[in-house]
Amino acid sequence: MAGEVAPTRRFGNGPSLNSLGDVASSTHSIESAHGYWHAGAALWIVYEDDDYLVVDKPAGLLSQPGRTLRDSVHARVLDGIDGVSGPVLVHRLDMDTSGLMVLARHKAAHRHLQQQFERRKVVKRYRAVLEHEPAGRDGAIHLPLRLDVDNRPRQIVCKTHGKAATTLWSRRWPEPATTSPSADSLWNGPRAVSFIPLSGRTHQLRVHAAHPLGLDNPILGDRLYGRRECADAITGTGTGTGTGTEDDATIARLYLHAECLGFRHINGSQLRLSSQPSTRNSRREPGDDRHNS
Image 1 (cartoon, one colour):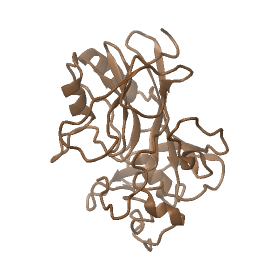
Image 2: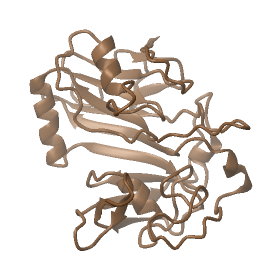
Image 3: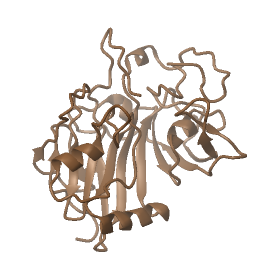
């Protein structure tokens, strides 16, 4: 149908996932067959039909196979979903980022999605928690980015050779608390913000949040660009001292979640789906030194 489209099923047990204004249905799960350590790493399917899948990726799961780890959204979909002929991936989320991804079940659907991403027609909104309460209420960040070839996979701001990147941001607080049983007050507190990327550069939101010419306020739990875990990786002038709260020392995930995704279906209807962030594995247990790469 045109407008909001209700999901057909989702995989895994967790907080409610639904298209805007609709109620999610029964649950199933695709688990890793490769001994993936991250508890709660079931891949949930929010929406599916003969052309597309929309999945909710947990933090800590790759979008596509890496050099040494096959377990990923791509591998699980190919291994666990019948009738997927590929190519599958049209876009990716960082391993540390959770939230919505759309995948194609066949070549024509892939091309249709690819054209929308190329033309910036796909609606994406992220929820994040920053290390500090942000100054101001909203704004736009325009900082060109490129790979730091001497320090992969970090990205750096480069006005000479960087690719244009723009991010819109706004404060979320105060807002009504979610009714999810796994709700985390941080996601709805004074440090919570919304990000809308108008471009799709690698680590764009993370760099735009952390850079002194951006928000100068890293995303909580960011081990590449955050000041709690390391010196300022962007300018090389940081002190390495923590800037969050005392309780932030237990943070075990990146507080960045792709919460809204909208695109035009190959049949002409407009799909718009949403997801609430889960707090599974959001806190580090004493003595746990594992981290996402």
